[in-house]
Image (cartoon, rainbow, N blue to C red; front, side, top):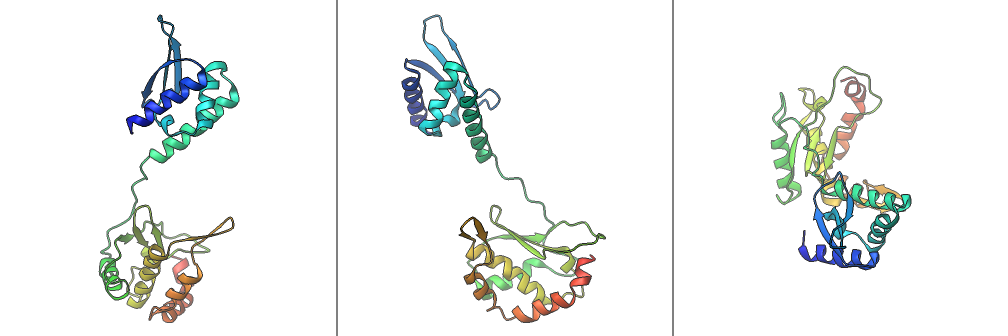
Length: 224
């Protein structure tokens, strides 16, 4: 973290406390803020370095908490610290199986679609998702796109001799298209299948035939 931000936190916190302080910025996520009066009379404050990124409202709450241990101020401090820690936490490693399955190689499908539909400009990983078999389903996701990992996962129910190549072509293209078009916000809703997405999806040569096959085989897919 930029040392200038820490110096600015030092200045702001001292200003809101109304006295010079000795600030020690720490990486301790358990003890967010602590303080003691030194023999010299100066107040030493130890706090999480992440508070250097806080706005004035949060820094004022830190000062008020130091002065009075006000419960409302404590809640503001803890809420900011929790959001900072979540933002710094690396995303969990994705779980997926290698692309080479028993009957189909997803890497081959991905490279074909990338070459023919995206000029080889799309960058992502691809693999089979994990999924328990032998249970009754009411719905099934045949593919998924994880933007934080740039990862396409395809349900292993499609790794079958009975699955036509054009179905996998379309499913992989559908997920790649999510990575290209992205999502849009409509009021409070996040729309993943936007009008532009639907338009481009319908341009795939297997659009109709793949959807027909999925519809006709849905019972078998759900009973995987």
